[in-house]
Length: 556
Image (cartoon, rainbow, N blue to C red; front, side, top):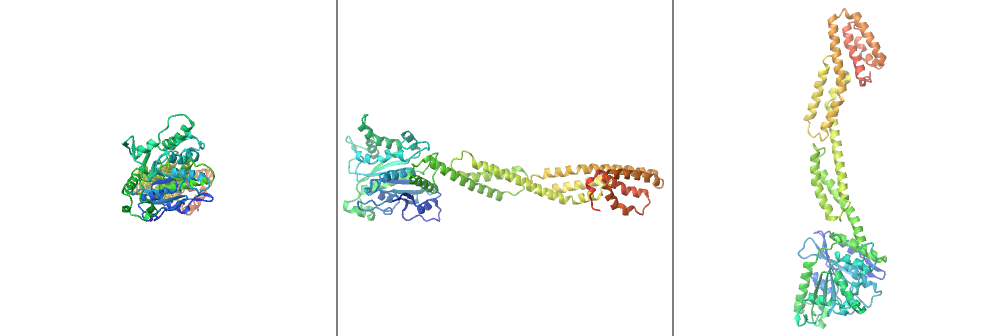
């Protein structure tokens, strides 16, 4: 329960026992659901009017709380709950359950007592059975509900009610068992020697030798107690006060009570606080208040539907629900931590993986604190998928940044290529210089991300064919210029015209789109008769048309 939540000042009804059977109280379930701490559940069962509620009030550190009553009429109906901070255990909550008295003559139906006892067993960490006077055959006969436990609780879904072979499975999740004897008047002696309360209990649970039907009846409750509850403890209490004062017991101070009774009650409470452990499920999963609320609802609904509560089914249902919620919460935690800690794109994959490792550990701690045993590794699989998503996003963002950067840095380069500026003698070196400038500026820019090397490589590869074409044009033009300069300008008029006409006819025949480029340059040669100028203008166009088809679609 959070620090801001106020602890209830009085018990609330957890399971109502009404005319239509058992019903879990929504108010009590909400109260339990708010408790995220592990819970230690101590319940008490026993015959009505035997002082169960008084002992539970003392465990709560109060004189009053659970209703005591002072007549032969049973006071507690159903199962009542009181949630309190556990003494000296700040990370645990103590849940006290006071149950309806067994064997109440006003009850209708013998199954009610059996279900009350079964629910107390199913929900508890420590179970207190309260009786009066002594542990004799009559007291053991009244505890016949232990014999019937296998008919009211199933451990596995494949078990059948009453299957005693299944009973060995009970020990794994059954609570510690404590027998309290009120108004005890006997001397704790055997064969003239003093014995402890525990020895007294163990002697009462001894088997009778023999194979008769009577022997079997005598031994059966003892066998069940010993088999179902291997951890046992006994406390005996003297009568707290004179009979006429008992109706006012909850108003009486300790100084008004029998000193030995007071001392034994204190010993009882200290022992309960000491040995009681967190409620766990088969497999060792610790039960929180939230989980306990779901267990209560599951068991009560099963009983109300006429079926026998099955621990395995309840745990599987809880595991599925809790694991789904645990995966979702931990996944959200992981995603938020990654988004807060990671600035995409990263320069290296290892940088991303290092952040992932830290975030994964924190999210995994959150998952394990809530989840049941996750045999199929649902959470880890979700994390792997999410990590791959982060890696893909990292690559995508890096690619986008690099592509935009290269596009910006290469604007001049692309414009010159488009305009044919490099298609001239010496143009290839200028092209290489500009390309190197783009590469250097790109490498100098920070925070390009993991894809920088790949995107740059692809960019340079995309310019290789262009570079070859420009180089070929450069070499060809230089050779033509040398040839023209060697023959002389005036002498070339006739030969150049014939040579150029033949070249033009051949190229235009192969590529009609050349006409668009010729049209663009026609204004430059319309009034010139110098053949060298004509060649210097038209030959690049021919070369471009032959080697750079992507430039043919330029608007005129």
